[in-house]
Length: 176
Length: 176
DNA sequence: CTGAACTTTCAGTATATACTGAAAGTATAA
DNA sequence: TTATACTTTCAGTATATACTGAAAGTTCAG
Image (cartoon, rainbow over all chains, first blue to last red; front, side):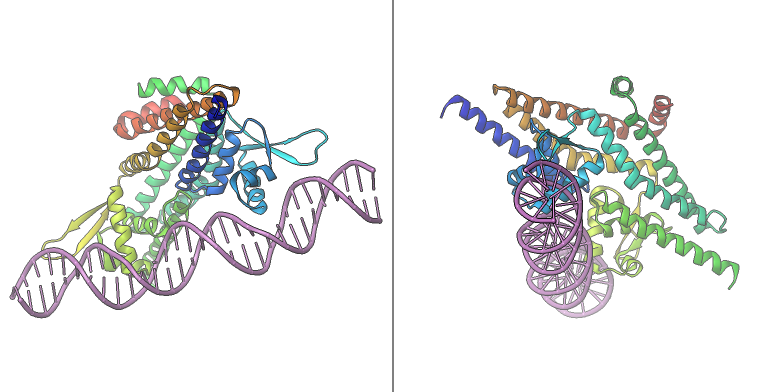
């Protein structure tokens, strides 16, 4: 085996390790495995890929690839690329880590934190005027939880809307 | 219906809304529904509860309650309470929001971020000495991802290990 | 010891979620 | 308008995950 072949093999192995493990890790964050694997594949792919290439690389069905590609585009993590003279769509991942981070933070906020906050607020409001130790304690818990979540989410959102070059030094100074 | 009865009914309704919705929300964060519901129930319960009371309140089986209580104790979100003259165990949730937050951040770090970082580092190392544009680009991606995740996790960890009274003002100043 | 009070385990089952692949749909070039 | 190249949909199926409940295990008072 030549050196070039060894390099290619080693690179392929590392790529596969990343793709497969990224899928496992994402599952713990409420993202489905295939979606994470497609994202990982495109993240480490030098060129944009089309549906058939992804099907082949990950050994999964057309329907599955299609659904998850749309979902990733919906998240704003992929861009559609068209090549002249070709009808099919290629997909390309955003590769700048800071941008990926900001996109994910903002989407999760919108999809998950905002609805959670609405529930907390509703529970706090409904019990605001009730008398009695039990009711007051419950109201207090809902209010505290709501305030805290709102503050934390606000901070994250602020970070995700900043420019990396402006916010990172501040964070570094803060945590020393 | 008396005013007291109305208050009691309204409070019960708000409690149930919180418990059921908290379960749904948690599912989006990779925490199972029942575990989240048990945690929610204990969060809004004035007194510690025992297995049978939780079974009755949430209409779930003994095995299920037992498993999820142990899991929650493992996370450090519940304390076991023993009452004199009684053999059975009661469970009580930590109610201070800041402490809950710190506990969750630290546990997720340990369980999910650290393993993820290990994979990124491994992938970066394995490809560090390979030649060629492809290999170098892959290596760069892994290195950037790893550095970013390590930084972000470090910042979160720092926050979660601080005292609330010290860190919150800093965060407020930062995000203005 | 023995039995009562309580906890844990786990095989079997239910439920939710993800995936397949073929058929239907759409757009374009000739 | 028809053939071709591609995308989308979705009923059916597979897989993973959660849950049940009864049996086995543990602890302790008497």
